[in-house]
Length: 113
Ligand code: 5GP
Ligand code: ZN
Image 1 (cartoon, rainbow, N blue to C red):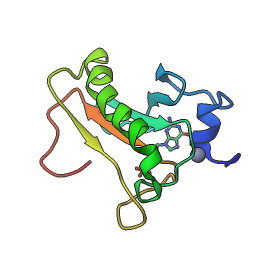
Image 2 (image 1 turned 135 degrees about the vertical axis):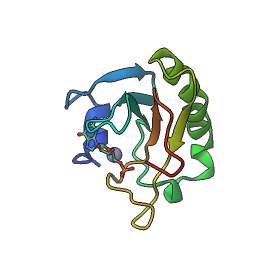
Image 3 (image 1 turned 180 degrees about the vertical axis):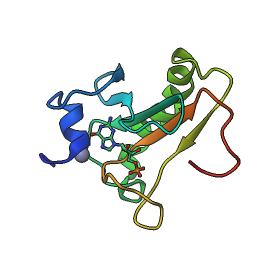
């Protein structure tokens, strides 16, 4: 998926506010933050949506979840945060490369972002 925006960010072709990187995961600041802390955690592998993930993807998905509290705390959202994965049209997904939103740094409203 050479023209996928998050693949291009993962390859370093487009600058992003990178906050974490390892061999298979990248985390960067959302370009339009909805909270004082708003980070996207993505697999470097192109997986379009959560519904497209396979059993082989389970380890990287688990690692994304395990990283979330560490990244949130590092960025000042140690009091708690919200995790969101929007999936497909009805889920409100805009970028079709799987991403986990981390939102925090303030009390989050009762409903979603
Ligand atoms: P979705 O609705 O697909 O779950 O959310 C996509 C998110 O990606 C949005 O919050 C949007 O602000 C963010 N986003 C879209 N394009 C870019 C980009 O080029 N760079 C960064 N850092 N975030 C982006
Ligand atoms: Zn992609």
